[in-house]
Image (cartoon, rainbow, N blue to C red; front, side, top):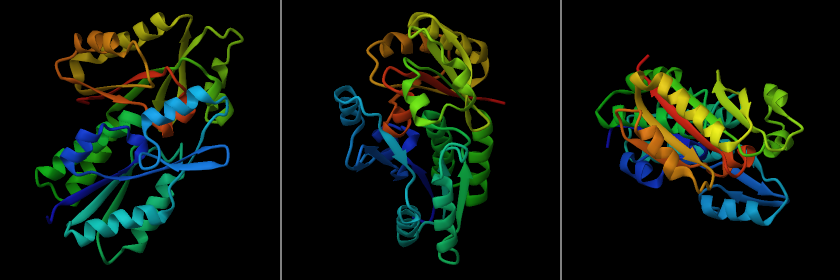
Length: 280
């Protein structure tokens, strides 16, 4: 093998076919409903997660992986003859996942070279950074090049989303400055973006139609510079028509993925978002 292995965490929301195509190692976070804990993707699929959310009023919570979970992935890469590992994880501002990765990297020192990259983003924004790095690794880039590509790609990644509800963010305590969005009117659709690794408010719209049009406008404004783009959605019936609108604006294929349990626990059902990378 003797190539650079890419490892990420399960908040990347990448579809299975892309994960398999590039042989990306996935370290799962954990999802809790009350006292019951599930390992993301292994014990709970995205579809099962949204089904549970519909059936219960209890908001799910998430927990970072233990260092041992990263250690196992790094060790596996070493055993398979990888020349090194680039581990790209969700924003350190949002989760302790990066600390687990860094601790595991220290433990395998001398055994295999591991670089941990903070993507400063999440969901398919993280996914986009991971794919860019995986393409470079597949093309034969060395660990320094792959690590630099991941860092550079993270700086050019934009994530914007329209939430259908603020309830999850509010109860999960992840709302930060987005608290200013809490309107007494339940019909308000909050808009968020990931900026410098943090979820920030980007305004609000009175209807879902207007919220989606806002996302379309964001893409339109960047369209000439977009080199890759993803649409992510949390069990949304209206995703196909939204993807069509986005596809008509850009010169590259729009890839579609579902918001998985890690991000879904905080964003809530009905969330729809765009993640794209610009040329500069």
